[in-house]
Image (tube, rainbow, N blue to C red; front, side):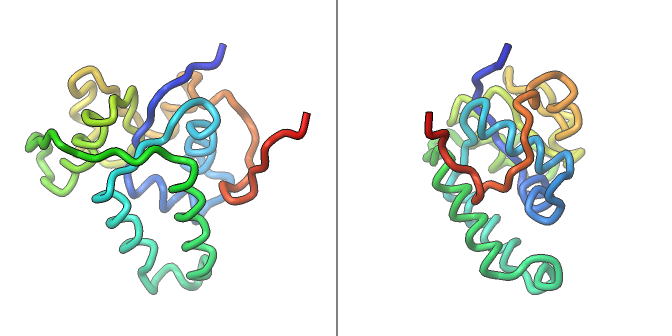
Length: 155
């Protein structure tokens, strides 16, 4: 049984998914894209762009590959306008993840950030690590293709 859902990925997981192709973060992101909808907000996109633009990643992935990855992620995600703000995380920078989840009707937040993980469940949104996401059966879709490499089936 495959579960359709709405998923929010923290920046740390998205960056790990790009840098480590067959890692749990990468498998979790690919599975979420197949199983349901990945949610993004303008604030999260801004943060992702800033983090992925850092020079320290140049030795792992070219700037062009990072731009293509982010562009493909945006094309396959749902952009959510955040109207309800929250101030509930012990790290205020993480409130944008909670806001996106609430405003987008997310079922899960996937994160490696302890400041978020300790809040699970947050207003009925489960907060799990990529490993937990895969273990509880949400990551059962299989496959390991890169985001920009997926093509639609030609049945």
